Image (cartoon, rainbow, N blue to C red; front, side, top):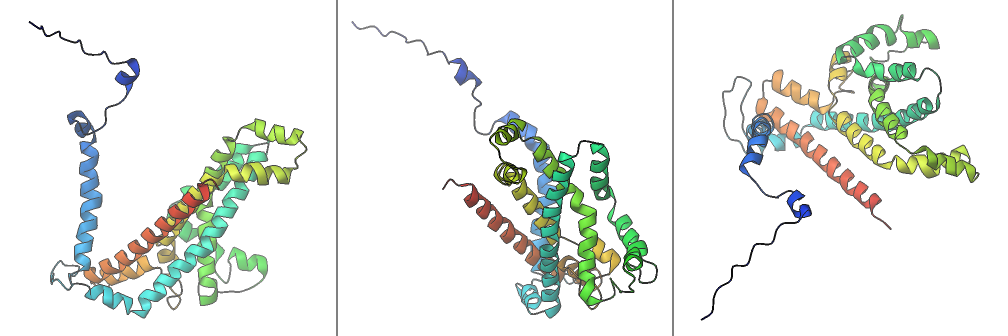
Amino acid sequence: MMTTVAVPATAATPAEQARPRRGWTQHGLLFVAPFLVIYLAFLVWPLLQGLRMSLSSVNIAGTNDRFVGLANYAEAFGDPRMWRSLWNTVEFTVLSTIPLVLLGLGLALLVHHLRFVQWLWRLSFFGPFLLPSAVVSLLWLQMIYPPEYGLINGALGTDVLWLGDPSTAMWSMVLTTVWWTVGFNFLLYLAALQSIPRHLYEAAAIDGASAWHRLRSITLPLLGRTTALVVVLQLLASLKVFDQIYLMTGGGPDDSTRPIIEYAYDAGFTGYRIGYASAVSYILFALIVVVSLAQLRLFRKSEEPS
């Protein structure tokens, strides 16, 4: 007669006990529930609701809510003012992103190598970023750009209408934005520079590498991830430009500075066409998604070993 022998269960090793269990659990759902509620209520639901409105003829009063399909998108793609505002947005993004990245890097390198009153330089470069858009707009509108008594015309001895001439209005908005927001990129670069081990520079200096070679061979390669982050954040921020342009030029003169967000704002809150404004907004949303995916793919390729 054969007897059955019970085999004791193998005790879990300390590594197995410490390994986190994957999958959904009741406790995990309980912890993430507040975030999920806020995420669904303030992001997913408005996103779906805006998409629904873009397919309707609803107005600002919430009436005339009829399904019109892709009619709003067809009208937007056939609207020259929409294309003009989209081009203004792209132009502003290109003109502002390049100096904001390069100048942020240059200021960070300067402050990183300064050995006296670094706190003052950090405060000076980052301080404008803390100002509200209304304060920045009023400062430049009343003190920098006025043709009669503005600081720029006073220094150059000219009487240029910086915000009143279509040939200079966009450049003026870029200059204001660079002064206002470069401090954020400067701070990101400065934090990245301070995290680079000093022994790398010391070893390179012992080998006879000049300052330029240390910058090119050590600093810039190690700042690659930070540069990718700065470029992504700056492009997204520039594509969503609205405040300073709306407050300083209102999109003028002759729609030369009107961004697509302001065009959507005017269509929805001045023309009372919420459905059409939603369609314009989703065109910008599609552009931002395409730019983000293209950048992600580009940066992934650049990080792949050759």
